[in-house]
Image (tube, rainbow, N blue to C red; front, side, top):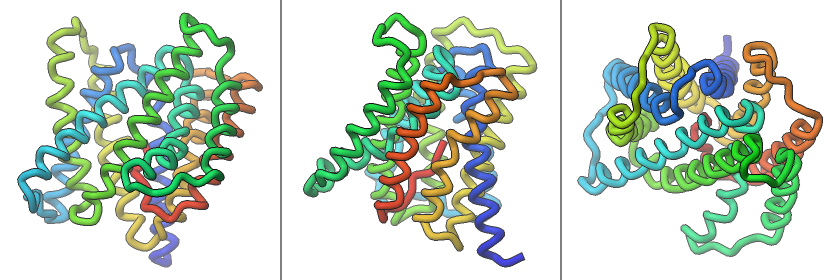
Length: 290
C-alpha cells in the first residue's frame, strides 16, 4: 500500500471516530461536565502512553507556555461540555451541525487576533450560515429543547474557533500530541470539582463507555489524524474533516434512533456547504476535529 493511500485511510478513520464521539452524549446518562471529565482523563492517560512510545519530548521550551496551554485546556473543557450539553438537550444532528459553524467564527475572529482586514465574502458566508442555523431551530423559544441545543452548539463552535486560532501559535513549536496532552490534562484538573459537586453514581457500563470515549474516540483518533498529516496536505485533511457531522448523523439514526427532520437536514446542508466553502478557500492548518 502506498504511504499516501495509507495516510488517507488514517485521516478518514480518525474523522469517522470523531463523528461517532458525539453519540456518547446520548449513550451516557451523565451530566455533560462529567462525560467530558471522563473523556479528558482517559484521553490524557492514552496520549501520555503514546507520547512515551514515540519518545516525544514533554518539556516545554518556555515557562509561559505551561500557563497558556493550561488556559487552552480550560477553553477545551468549556467547548466539549457545551458540545455534549447541546446533544443531550436536543439531538446528535443539532449538536454536530451547530458545532460545525466554527470555521465561520474563525473567519471573523482571525482578523481581530491577527489584525487583518475582514473580507466581504466572509460576511456573506456568515449570513448564509445563520440562515442554516435558523432552519435548524424549530421555533425561537429558549424554553424549547431544540432551540437550547442550538444555543449550546453555537457556543461550542465559538469556543472551538478560539481554541483553533490560539493553538496556531503552538503547533509550530510542539507536537500536536504534546499540545493535546497538556490541554486534556488541564481540562481534567479544571473539571474535577464538578465530580465533587455533582452526586453521580457510575455504573460499569458508564466507566467502560468513558474509557472507550477517552482512549479510542479521543486519544487514538487524534493520533491517527496527526499521523496521517505526515503525507497528506492540511488542506485535504480539512476537507475530509467536514465529513465528521455526516458520520455522526448517519450512525445516530441507527444507534440511538434519531432521524433528523427535513428542516434540520436542509439547515445542515446550508451550514456544511458554507463551512466547506470556507475550508476550501482557506490555506490555514486544520484544527483537530472532535
